[in-house]
Image (cartoon, rainbow, N blue to C red; front, side):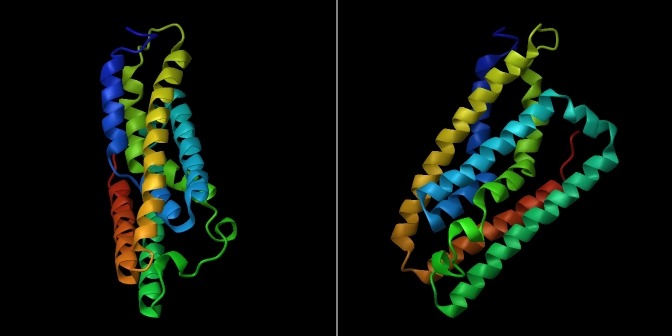
Length: 217
């Protein structure tokens, strides 16, 4: 046992694989970086980091038990989250369709300064808090590796949290630079850009549907 962590390397491997699974937060960072560049991409990533930190703190404080004992509260939260993710997806698809019909590049359609238009930190934070993958990870997988009898469980959660945040930072960094590179390559291909944005929007609709059917078990 390592600082109250029952199987540290199993957690590391599991956390790495889970980070690689696509989720609404990572797709939002990718899409926003492709539209507005590296700096704005990291603003969105900062919202993801804060959202994950909040979920970790809630998991460590016993939020999973609270939600299990209050099924109505969990139902309200998950349907509200599902509606928000679906709305985000619909907005992306609608924006891509309008840009396609107008003959303008998606990255320039309805474009305003990023600070005024999108508020990337706030949106990424909200998406992260409603991410079904993160919710299930932090209330089930994350807490399962802490020995309840350890004298300093806060240290255990801190180590586990540092591992997942490191993987998240590396993964989002790759997405940010990859997204800006791809955007530069496809900037003149309006229909391809619109198709890619529509695809991301469709995935958000799927994430909303998944959250609506999520169960804490």
